[in-house]
Figure 1 (tube, rainbow, N blue to C red):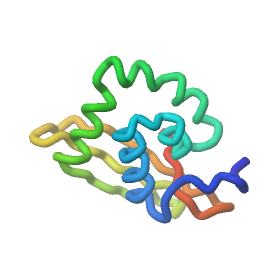
Figure 2: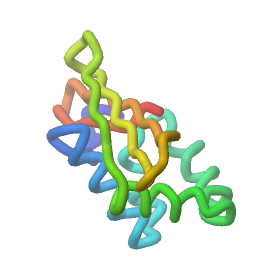
Figure 3: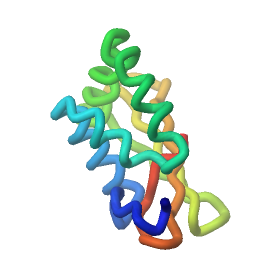
Figure 4: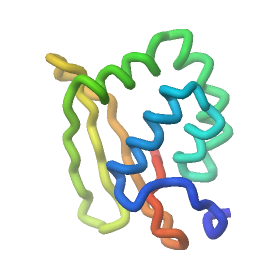
Length: 109
């Protein structure tokens, strides 16, 4: 499945941008494709809760109006990005994993 998975960006930042754009468009089927293959169904099932709780809107607002902090891991295939709301100190955290077959970054968590 990973060999055929072409969703994601060349950098973790680009994957996050694509994910946010899909959320803004309310294209949740596309948004979950930026997750690692084995988490896509689970994340799709969680989307209605993210919508109803306001979590998705809060994430989009934090991304568009706040700040991000990027941290590479010791291994070259793992990366973390934290998205901070404007004036906030509790981030939305994302861990990314590089798909070794397509060289696209995927959301792991």
